[in-house]
Length: 309
Image (cartoon, rainbow, N blue to C red; front, side):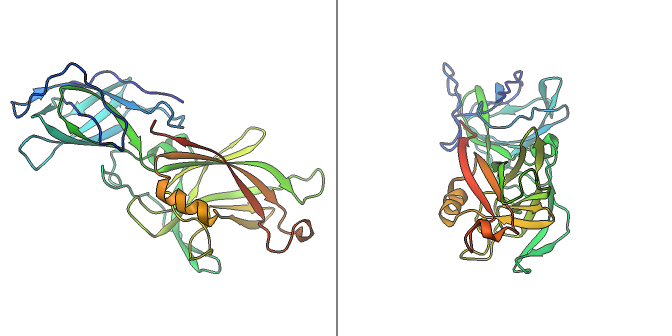
């Protein structure tokens, strides 16, 4: 995957990231505690194995807050990307060390260093005979729309005048590839329409539930990709939860859920991970091809990657 290293931005510094995030390095610098504000340098990077193909585009923005030594109110800045260079507004960024910083992507009204909420259309409907209500729809059908949902943050202590910052992914990337079909007559390939993943509405929420229109690629096989909040996508198994995926197959809606045990780990440990699945789709009308109660789709976990290595 692409690693983005950008030109030095004059004006601020960041210290070693909190243990959850990738470490920053600043060998050879001396701590200048409590002295006057000073300009510094920084590299902004994304993890080399972040599992994403999108690149920064002109006019992309990162939000930045710096709280200086001895102060409680942060100074806010906007970093804007143009022609492979990040520039700051206000133009001069200075810090009294040691300070604390918070940086976040995207720098939009629905995101901060502490919280992210999806932007969605209000077109609610019921699943499982309306036992589970889906409040609206998130559009992730392009790389740009997918990137706008790829919430990244950096919370750090600022103690040295030169540092590298790794932006850490805080949501979850899921990719599902349809590998085979079972139960149809030979030569018939079913028509798959209206693919939907499901998610809760934000990083600090338990509801409402939303559907996600994924990025779809067809190159011999159909692959769906979305960015969601890791949660209990188990359907009506031990609760009233949405499924993981919904597909319309030859006009019939099929719901794919996560197993209960997997969903527990997914919800607890899924932030910052990229999950790859294979899917076998079975004919919902060919009941003689499987035992009663068997799943209409089989979801196989292929790979889990840490996007913040």
